[in-house]
Amino acid sequence: MPWNDQFECMPVEQLQELQLKNLKETLNWVYEKIPFYRNKFDEQGIQPGDIQRLEDVRKLPVTVKTDLRDNYPFGLCAVPLEEVVRVHASSGTTGKPITGPYTAEDLEQWIECMARNLWAAGIRSNDIVQNAYGHGLFTGGLGFHQGASRIGCTVVPTSAGMTERQITIMKDFGSTVLFCTPSYALTIAERAEEMNIDIRKLPLRVGVFGAEPWTTAMRDEIQERMGIKAMEAYGLTELCGPGVAFDCEAQDGLHINEDHFLAEIVDPATLEPVPMGESGELIFTSLQRRAMPMIRYRTKDITRLRREKCACGRTLIKMDKITGRSDDMLIISGVNVFPSQIESLLLDVEEVLPQYVLVIRKKGYLDQLSVRVEAKPDVYNLGAEKCAEVEKKIAGHIQGMMGINVKVELLAPKTLTRSEGKAMRVIDERPKG
Ligand code: DLL
Image 1 (tube, rainbow, N blue to C red):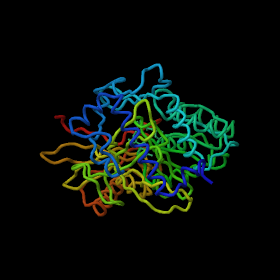
Image 2: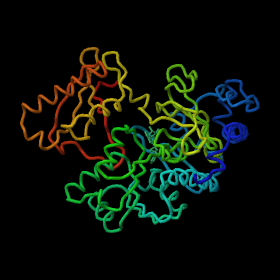
Image 3: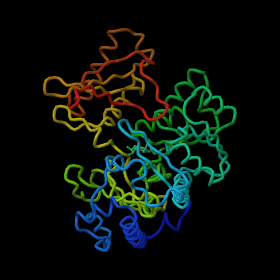
Image 4: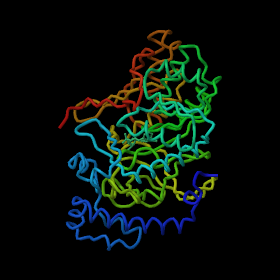
């Protein structure tokens, strides 16, 4: 049974009616309260009243990250700060952070979305949950904390980092659930092996991972090494944080909390809608938020939507695992390449560890990709000849599967920095500008 079957299992037609009602209210709200949206709508000659069907949302202008940066910190906030009870922020890699202000009601909705997510992962009030997402401005720590508290779990807010202590606490407290990024889960698994602690023998039984792209191969690896079920959370600061979409026991796509977020998929180049089931960029419109609703926000995340009956009984639309971000897409010898495709292939190679980075350089006019991946210790110890053989095998595998030539460099185990949060998988050494 879902956390909230009224909304999670609502007949689709009824759900869409609700979405339309909330969309209209949100558009009136932003038009009245936020000059940025009013001006943009006016420029396009569009009024909230022109939106009469859900599809009409396509008539509205899109919003992008730079709009948030340009209006930093509170230019897109619809309410006076005295009605704001929390502000989160995401640093991003460049420039000013973007902010996420919440009214008390927004916070309440976020907690509801997170409770649905964690409940779907099978988490109940008797669980001891170790929350190793970064606590602070990042939405992961507090988002998961509040959701688990709502269910009534025993929450242990370890935050990210101090990996040995994470493992000691996991063992001493008997944690049954772990929250962190998938890359940090691997770091924890590796450190535990070095400490001679077999996580598979501990009470830990489920993890809820997210905040960065990860493949199903990575999911299998974590499940296997930790002896747990690896469930997923998806979200972004701009919309609330985690809790936008989540997977259920079927582990076959992520249900979007559609009563809160209206999803579209467009072609990132033309912004035209793609047919249902085809891949493109995910765009979201907030349907219930008050402090900072987003209208047609371009996530840059690439996925596809599926409206289908799910074994779990939820009617909420599903999205596939994110395959990458449109700004992460590399074009190598004319082939579009997402880091996640390389990850899937690397995780199939038994001689290497799931620790890798991709380095892009410019050679003449062409982009060149190097794959740096750590060898397993016993393979590395066999010497240079063996390593060269494995490098050749991986390069051949990538050539065969993706049709691109890459340079593969096998590294000594433990060469790459271990992740405690969002892993850095791509190093772009191409000249800027
Ligand atoms: O990462 C919120 C979050 C926290 C989600 C904890 C899940 C768990 P931001 O820091 O604003 O928010 O980053 C948002 O991270 O646009 C995606 O590119 C990526 N991302 C988040 N979840 C997933 C996921 C949080 N499950 C950006 N799979 C998003 C792939 C994800 N990418």
